[in-house]
Length: 342
Ligand SMILES: Cc1ncc(COP(=O)(O)O)c(C=O)c1O
Image 1 (cartoon, helix red, strand yellow):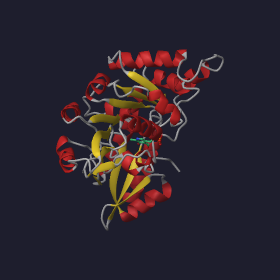
Image 2 (tube, rainbow, N blue to C red):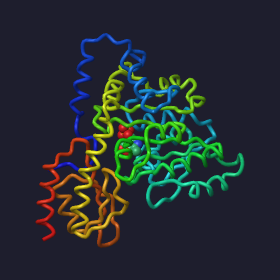
Image 3 (spheres, helix red, strand yellow):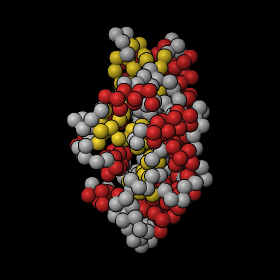
């Protein structure tokens, strides 16, 4: 049974495993003060063209989101997110557990805009309500869609004008930056967000993400928050060496591109069968509406996520490809799929 459930079901890219094993005989200081961490941070700053960026190596997405967001906000401040946003749906109330309300906005494509945020600001007008202070977005979004440079810039300028912080969750940043329609670069992320992270777990890393504060006024004393939340790894270099390799020789974007290309092949198969998508296919996640009986067949033979009923006749399934998805697997699927629809 082949697995199109997610993009973290393979251990790690061979270059990362190699770099990782190269550390085996070294004696490293730990807690983020070793050569590997220093080198990786320098490399990331160079790529961002941001010499002052404050960078921290984290073990996963949820711990990154909750540690950073709870550090930035005062106790009475709240997060604004799309209703489909990862912090709202898939993190077990982690943000709320740190004492911060998540205010949600309904979206059709998973993306936030100034127009969608404005009513929240108007409604929260005094100290009898929480104060909206941080806008959470992800790129790619939870629906696999991406932000254009113009959209991100507009959102950032709106946040600046309204004294809001813009936080970008980059769990799948490689797929966003490698998407056909993308026009954002790493330096743009340094310019048009206050804080973001470069996701590794879903892009060939064993595990780990690099959190980047562009606005260093909000990262003051961040290591205290990290330690208190159990987020400082004694062996921080384990994440640093992997992110460093990913950020060298364009590997990060190459792996993102591979993931997207594999999804692109599936997209063609589904389009040729006359199927529709619940969200615009732009990256490595496809949300496809299948007639119920066909969805049942797929679920019996393939591991994919069942999102829910599109309506009484159609079921929405998510197909997710990865940096390690093989062409062979797509071909096998295409063959089987063709038999089902004939
Ligand atoms: C956009 C996004 N953010 C955060 C996470 C959480 O990552 P983790 O499962 O490593 O905590 C995920 C995981 O699926 C994600 O897709």
